[in-house]
Amino acid sequence: MSVRNGTATPGLAASAVEELRERHFTVTGSGNAASRDHTTTVVSYGPGEREHAATLARLFPGAAVEAADGPGLTVTLGADYRPDAGGAGNGGGGTGASGKTPGETGRSAADDPCADLSYG
Image 1 (cartoon, helix red, strand yellow):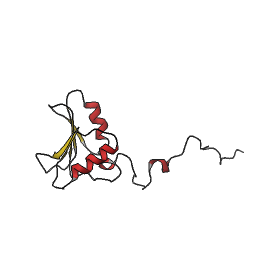
Image 2 (cartoon, one colour; image 1 turned 60 degrees about the vertical axis):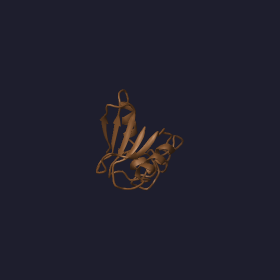
Image 3 (cartoon, helix red, strand yellow; image 1 turned 90 degrees about the horizontal axis):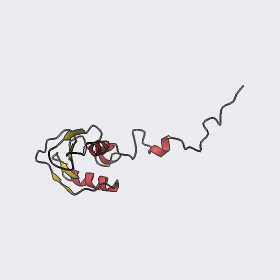
Image 4 (cartoon, one colour; image 1 turned 45 degrees about the horizontal axis):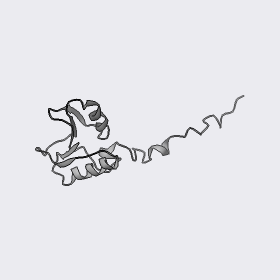
């Protein structure tokens, strides 16, 4: 996949590439988009890549998913992208609105939800 900075914010593509590689995605290229006035992040996909694009778009909340003529996947970052704000593009993990990681808000399978209940 390639990552393009569709904004005037310097270094945005490099930040996204780093975050994606930390998540074990293979990024083959990055740079600036032809247009630098994107307000929304767009995940473009080539033939046969729609499911991969949908998976990738989950890391960029609010991203549009669009078909493209060329092969592969391209992420064009928009002004809505915020690096290091909870994962690639604000929603791929990390902390949520509560400031807790996913493991801090749930319970494990070993927890007994009925331990404090009384019958009678």
